[in-house]
Image (tube, rainbow, N blue to C red; front, side, top):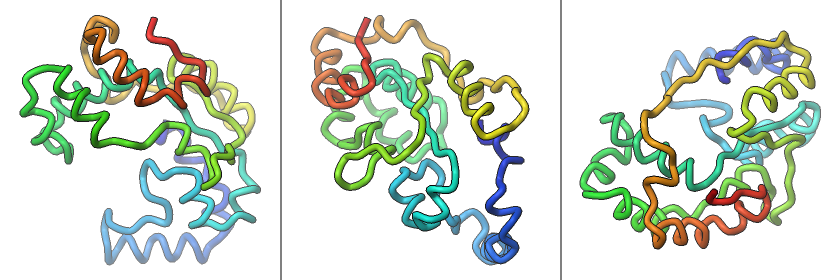
Length: 189
């Protein structure tokens, strides 16, 4: 998605001072400084660019079924030795151990990425990974860029997410992500 959207940066193209600052900071701090961090939540982006600029754009993001997301994340971390959590996750003997650790150590909900400090949604559109092509086509229409299909990067190979869960761990995810599951309408099956 990042590659497809790379050319759509009207704020940066129209604001030469911001372009200059970003180029200069990258020269002296390669990969360390960003106006907006990768995977930043909407609240952080709005704070960094200011509400006036934030509100001028069509803002969007994507969510994923929490059970499916955790299976994918687990296998992604195991496959990527450079991932910051690889040394921790690779010590677990089973997926169940990972899930039990995860719910104890990761308190962030997907909904938090799209809301302000009071829980109000501050983005214009939240698409679903399960409808990625259709939802991204909607985004492309809204921002006025040519339709193109998304490449599937960081794909992990695994069986259907449901086959990885014990009843106990499926319930742990249901409890841990209850607000996301209710808000976005997800189910285990």
